[in-house]
Length: 138
Image 1: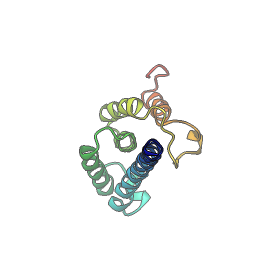
Image 2: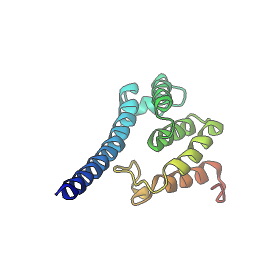
Image 3: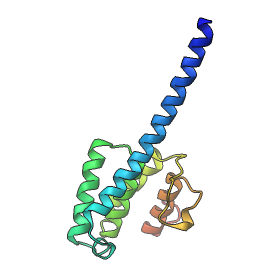
Image 4: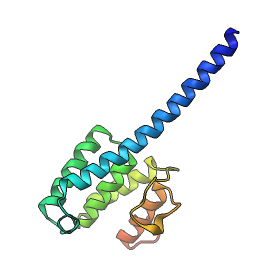
């Protein structure tokens, strides 16, 4: 009887751990989305390089990154933000980090329909190739 209870308890713990991992991934996406939306009053403001909305969003993302340095969602958001600002030198290391930290992770939502079914590392590689205009960039 004790072995059955122990096994059930182990299954419950594994299930709870899996749910916590799913929750952490979704919370990460929510934090990134919050950083983008709350720091930027409108998409037009955010997309204007050098705008205060873009700078504020990037600062919020940098603060989130400081707390979660290997979060591929935050790294990808920072890479895209730096690329939009024309700071390719700062975007490239974040794209490369996503290629390591985002292996096998398929994002629950996508900004671009062309990325459907791709993992974060594949998305980062595609973006890095396009940014650097180098098909062998990754």
